[in-house]
Length: 335
Ligand code: TYM
Image 1 (cartoon, rainbow, N blue to C red):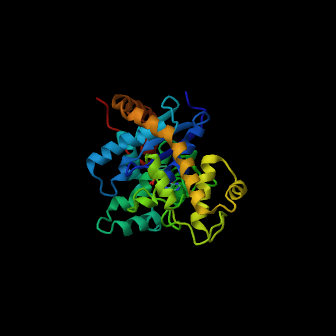
Image 2 (image 1 turned 60 degrees about the vertical axis):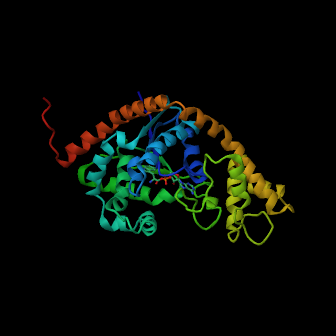
Image 3 (image 1 turned 180 degrees about the vertical axis):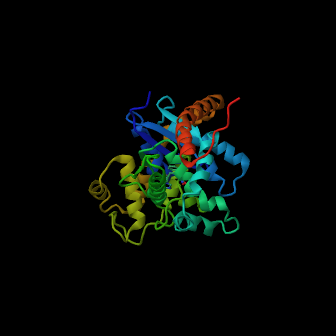
């Protein structure tokens, strides 16, 4: 049915309450592909366990992430929404591709370096080989396009290298995917330290706006956002905080930088921060309402997961058979 459609794949880790960075950098853009592409959007729980998770939290967040996908506009009738660990081909191809990914390549991954600094007591092998599991996620579905924020770009480059390497050895097996990185919202910065990216796992709650934060919390966080000692709302390299707030305001209102600068000329940062907070909270309110509605119907979420996993399996299976044959694995006799 979808044979003529090109494939989009992306994933989000259920490792914390999702942030404005996840929303503007990734999820908000996902539904734009649903009509033209065959889309797979995956809750990547296997990636999440590279950092120690509380099992009850992981389980709950897996449902929440799926519900957020839908609350952000992904219709399960038009998109394959599923949980990574429900389709064991991800882990299987992940292992195979570990054997085609170089130690040196994995050592250069900046996310590995960051995460091993933050989790110095748990630098496990999974944290190191995490990128080849991501490579497998993408290649398993013969993906053409991967919508991501800019922090995942290096992993996408690795995916292309591993796919090309495998194809060079065994002949055409995998489609070589392209990243789709949004122009303005590819890297939403921390509100507390605007030189750092906004991250789910930041310990400073004031640094991170969560998609599910109530309106007053969102406004409070924006009011506290770090700017600079000036008072001019203007985008500039030495005004990282203000520039980040302008990006967020523009994403929610559609206004250009010139329009924003004109709107707040002579008004100072207080008014501006309040306006950003309100625009953000108002835009997230319908997402939050739909999220609450979906979370109240666990049976429905489980149906979506089951259908998604079945559909994903059907397509993953084709790639797995091809890969197994090419590398010389035997098939067990069916009895
Ligand atoms: P994760 O869960 O960290 O983030 C999910 C998506 O959100 C984007 N993102 C941001 N975009 C803009 N500004 C930010 N501050 C920001 N923070 C996060 C991420 O770039 C990502 O697109 N390894 C991936 C998950 C993954 C995946 C995949 C993605 C696993 N397999 C296959 C694409 C394809 C990750 O940790 O994303």
